[in-house]
Length: 368
Image 1 (cartoon, rainbow, N blue to C red):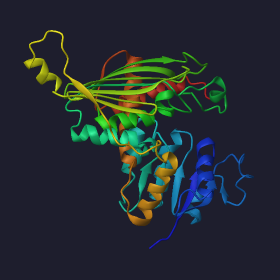
Image 2 (image 1 turned 90 degrees about the horizontal axis):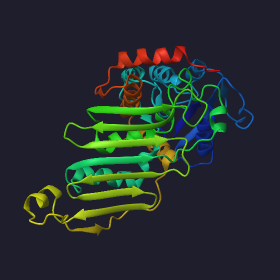
Image 3 (image 1 turned 180 degrees about the horizontal axis):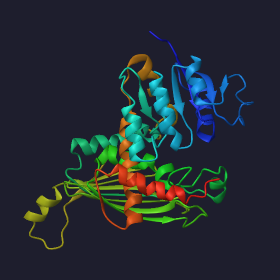
């Protein structure tokens, strides 16, 4: 049995170099960094001990790695991922797995050998708050879910962030803004916990807070087949921001905000109480129910790297299979399409229609 995973990182920018440092610091047992790949050699001196490749084909032919982590600009996630899968390597891809649904489907279809581990960097799935909430929702602790509201506006980014690279915040370089860059994490958690909606109406503002061509302020409304609704609000232009996830069900309300995980449970389900009470203004009696949670917010990026490594070495189940990354891509695409076309979008999203829309935006893009 293989005792270690030889990993190469494709894309040594902000994220890729951060992952490299974590591995070199020994934070991921069983994983050894053996190669870096990036046509820009800006960080090559810092990682001088590593073999450095200027292009993906050279790395894939080298025999220096068993697996790759793809941390390139978004559009290259698809092309580099397909090439790595076809070469027989294990693959971990940063979020989003692709810019749009059609590319995501192509990438997922390239994973034909099930012995190859194929994962996505959805690091917030390691957070015990969201893991616990998922178990409670699926286990029926809140009863039938009625409404989900997530205000996630603590993704503030100043102008300097968008100026650091010419591909950022452009349709041709990044394929979107807050929905494709920061919020794949939150959109992934939304569907991971509550499932996919049947309809969405999106309202996006493009360059509201920054001199960019993509969305930096979003409000979306979701409808589900079982009648529940959802609201999703996000921005990179508000400070101080908010991160508050509120879930209302028949059995009460649960709020995740900061260090708070608060479950206010109804003693009688809402609908049952409403039918039976003779009082005109009384609500169901309720009590605060303590929920045991581990401290902290999970191991995040390192946790996903550990899980990926253990899946290769020991067959550990993946916390974030790459195929599930399709859902957050589809949600982001649908919100953007809904806003741009001024209409409600139904799921499943038409991949060809969105691809055509995106191509039009790319032609007008000012990517440097």
